[in-house]
Each structure stands twice: as C-alpha cells, then as structure tokens.
Amino acid sequence: MKIRTPAKINLFLSVGRRNADGLHELLSLMQAVSLFDEVSFEPAEELSLEVQPIGAVPDGDENLVLRGARALAAMQGVEAGARIVLEKRIPVAAGLAGGSADAAAALIGLNELWGLGVSRKALQRIGAGVGSDVPFCLQGATAVVGGTGSDLSAVPCLRPVWWVLATPDLSLSTAAVYAEFDRLGGGSTDDPYEVADALARADLDRLAESLRNDLQPAALSLAPEIARAGDALREAGALAVSLSGSGPTWLGLATDEARAREIAGRAAASVARVEVVHSITHGPRIESPD
Image (cartoon, rainbow, N blue to C red; front, side, top):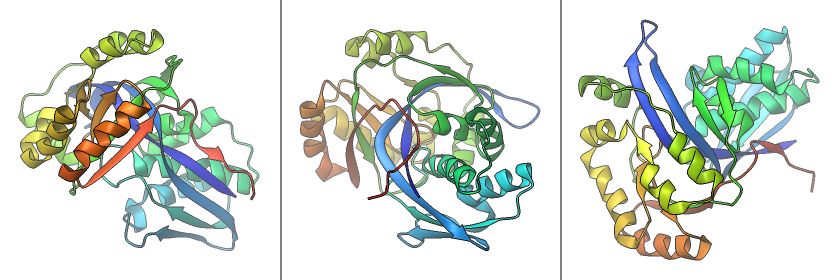
C-alpha cells in the first residue's frame, strides 16, 4: 500500500501570546498543494522506517512518522509491526509541514494495514498529540485552523490557485522562530476572513492583498539571507509574496499555471529550489496498485 501525502502552505498565520502550557494562540488558513511525499506500508513483525534519500529526515523519537505510528498503536492497544518506506520530496524544516504530512499518512496507512477501523476524526485527535499541523494534514484541502490544530473549518476554494514555492538552501527551527517572535514582542490573533472570502470568490487581487504571516519578521531576524528568495519571486512578477509557516519557504502567488512557470523560470537562478504547485481539494490518498 502506498499513500501520497501533500505539503501544506499558510496563506494566513496570526500568532498570539504564549499560554501557560508553552503553546501560542494561533489562527491560520492552510491549504494543501500539489507537492507530495510517498509513504509505503507492508506487514512486518516490528515497526521500522526507511527513508529515501537516506538522512533526509531525523530518526528516532524526533521522527513524526514513528511518533504517529506509536501513538496509534498505544491508543488502540495494538502490538503489531510494519515496514514503512518514506520517499521525500517535500523539503524538510521548510514551513511546508512535510513531517506532519508524513505522520498523517502513517496514521491513515497503519489504520488500514492493521484493520483498526478508526474514524478520520479520531485520527485527527491522535494526530494533534503528535504535532499541531497533523490534523489539517489528515483533512487536506483548504481550512481555517485554530486551537492546537484540531479546530478545523473547511474553506471553499472553487478554482485551483497557482503558487511558486521558493526554498533557500537552509532550514529554520520552528521552536527558534517562535522564541524570536516572543523576543520581538509577540502579536495577536485575527480572523482570516479576507483570505477565506477571496478564495471563495476566486478574487486573486484581494487574495494578494490579504496574505499574512506573523512569523515572517522573526524568521527574517534569525536568517536575513532568506529574504533573497522572496525578493526573487517579487522581481519575477509574483502577485504577492509571503513566508509559509516558520519558513524559510516563500510563496509567490500567480494568476495561472503559465504565469507560475514563467515566474519559476525567472527566479530559479536565485533560489536553491523552486516548485510550481497548485491548491488541491484533498489530503493523503491511498494509491491504487499498478
């Protein structure tokens, strides 16, 4: 069994104060896009993970695939194994929730492989304990996300939205970006109404004006050099540019596929990695056998 699991981007990310539990208040609008990791599963006596290319993600307890698998097994009282093979295409530590997407695939795949029959809603609850982006990654499409990630409200997006992703050749620690956000004075949460309404009306000009990421100043404070990738998208003609998540990947909004490919071609010489993607209306999917 193989599952294709998509990356996510943040079109809107408002961040409030840090609570007593150490977590920040968040209100975000996330969108699944057409950049996928592939996760394969087969029966085995023990739980194991093989990553291609080797070294692409951390192993041990830091790996969200294994954390998700163990959380599902513990919650269901399962003593079963599986051989999991992860083929990485989503950049690591790039603000695209690649680890959370893989954890979502693990929950779906092992639920199927082990014949557990756990509902998607229950998987989201388990996933929230693994990472705040996992519940959205289980659902996919476009949604407003709040709380610890489990508060999801679907947002209509009737036409594909085209993006150019520009990822510099470095990674940013999410924890470090949030710490810098606090040091710079924090912020407050706001409703992503303008972005949601722009998507529902397919109004790209309004969408361009409404993109927001409260973590962008903190990420730039920690790594000023990442600004070059965003500048490259602007100079190449993107309608608007914004950081995704805690970075360092930038989103460049395009009017259509042809324009997105033109922007990508112009920016490619200035950025380590450039991808043309579009919004999708689903989350992880089990692939049919060849």
